[in-house]
Image (cartoon, rainbow, N blue to C red; front, side, top):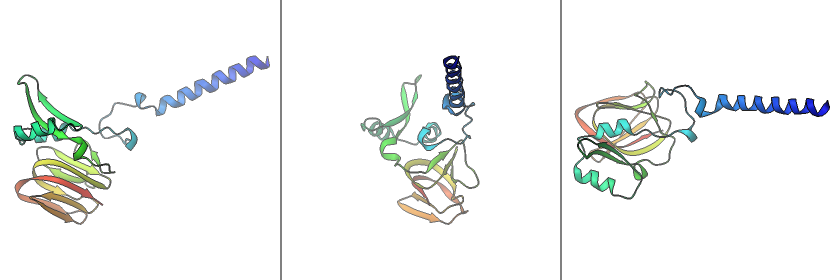
Amino acid sequence: MFKSGLRKLVVLATAATMVGFSFVSPASASVDDGLSPVSESTLVPDYTEMLWSLAGSQSEEEIDRIANSGHKVQLLVDPKAGKILAAIDTESTFTPSALTRLGPGCSTTSLCMLNSVPNGYIGTGSLYGTWSSVYRYATGDRTGTFRYNGLDWTHAAYITINLTTPETITYIARR
């Protein structure tokens, strides 16, 4: 009788543990709408919006250089045309940091760049990249730095900059 009771207790404890794990398992999480909080260890960057924002702005030579760099690369490919439309070197473009893409879009407290797609970032750190045709950017709730035309522009929190001509931003930082 003692062995039978102990066996039932072990089975119940194992079942309770399995149920507990199922509630925290990423596989059982609800549908990801892109707005749910995600821990940094499970965050997989999505470059789709950035690739689409680059489509048509990169030369074939630049795309070929990135695609053949031997680095970790993300490509946007039009299979019907048999053509690479955009390329991002994710190995040298993105440095390890806590600056994380907010998606989709921006918030009032995020670093934000507007072109055809709102590009928002939260946390602190820096990123190298190519955000083309940016006509407005904002720092959000922290000091932000934006590099374009070879110059770094650093602005205090809650500053929005409207550009007279669209620019390509190649570096952002937030502290």
